[in-house]
Length: 329
Ligand SMILES: CC(C)(COP(=O)(O)OP(=O)(O)OC[C@H]1O[C@@H](n2cnc3c(N)ncnc32)[C@H](O)[C@@H]1OP(=O)(O)O)[C@@H](O)C(=O)NCCC(=O)NCCS
Image (cartoon, rainbow, N blue to C red; front, side, top):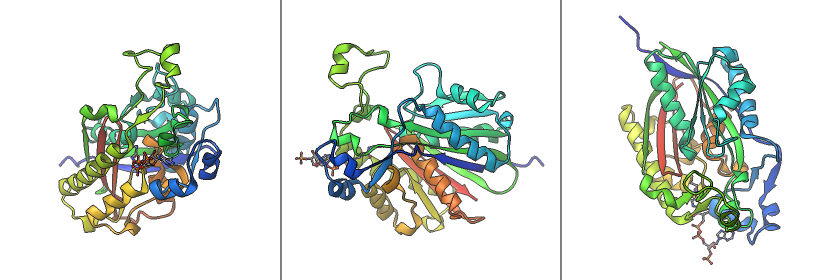
């Protein structure tokens, strides 16, 4: 009998640039306060990449850690899937740049533009490739330097975002463990609620539109907030049902770190106690595609995933996109 091929996470890594920007620092930059940011978002500080540091540099550090833990060499990677909305360049993909820096010469390369859901989209694609036997080891990354596309004079957005990278090596196994299932979704009709209006091929950069600050992130915060709660509840309930478990079976929920109030609303709707929910938004802010894999890596290093335990990952982001994954360790 042919054994089913499962996808398990064989190694994780993460890296955040060393420069810390606190709420008190932000008080000196825009009309805001530590009290407001803490109460409305749960964020106390975030990391900022130095000028000249590329997303691929952050991704390289996280990836090397993940490979080391997975005990594989770069030439054993069959595919690199890199989620980002802040690529090194418009052309070529950041996955290509990383492949060269990592010397992963046998890897196919692909960027995924799914904003904060990028890592879960990557994990889902990786798991599909592995289950059909096409690849054995896939490097899935979420990386962002959102500090480069945020308007540092706009208090509505600049207090929320941060920079970082998280990576996971996902590998084939015939053991009864790994990714139990994934769920992906999206709604492009809500694109205008969270977007960068110019700089693409539809509206290339001009001196005039740059002066209007249209090349930065624009966001309708409270509309995004409501959609985030709705879609992440939906994605978590969907995956729990799809893989045939109950909410009580979830040992750890790793949600996208967008806002502590979004995370708490999600936990409340799912009737999950907060001690089963991983939170690090206070230290990193919203790192978009990097948020879930950084949290995943931290939780693993803290020994929070016991053998046989079940984690659910869930994210929501610009697009809108959303998705979830259930993993048995
Ligand atoms: C952005 C967000 C924190 C704003 O919180 P909110 O409770 O919705 O606040 P509002 O946008 O209603 O603004 C309330 C007031 O605070 C003000 N405000 C906004 N940002 C502020 C800041 N950094 N400091 C102080 N005041 C601020 C607003 O101007 C507004 O003032 P007004 O009432 O005089 O007009 C919240 O909407 C949010 O987190 N949304 C989701 C964002 C997100 O997750 N994006 C990424 C998705 S992956």
